[in-house]
Image (cartoon, rainbow, N blue to C red; front, side, top):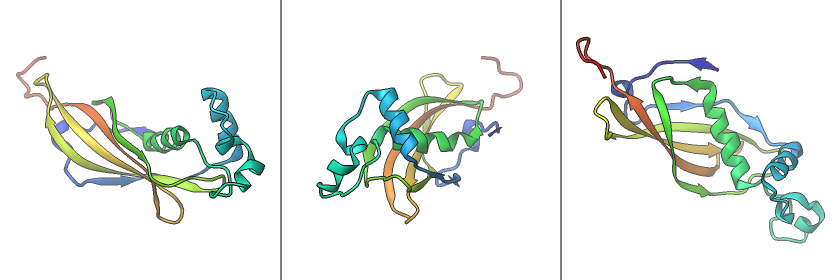
Length: 153
């Protein structure tokens, strides 16, 4: 993890970065279920899942989101603030033993309510070891603009 100051003007549409991968474990399933209270059999009951069309346990979508977004935190921008996430979709299931990574593409820029800030949208795709997109979302950022030397906030 490292800090890299990037101001609004420095973001370029279609710029992309790719994270390292992370293999999903059974411990991840158990810990996430404990944190959220979601002990549905789809996530926790291996034998029941064998009787279902998917045949094995499916990762919690919120866990895949949390881990996939956590992977993006290898680069911290002290000039940006997260406003939230839009258009999240669980595209494909993730299973124990799958390895995911995240690909982040700058998809939009715009003005903010405060003139010293701008908005940036990062399109995030979480991808498994087979190159399949398993989750997508848009991360909304509020980013400081570079100020002229004689301008104060």
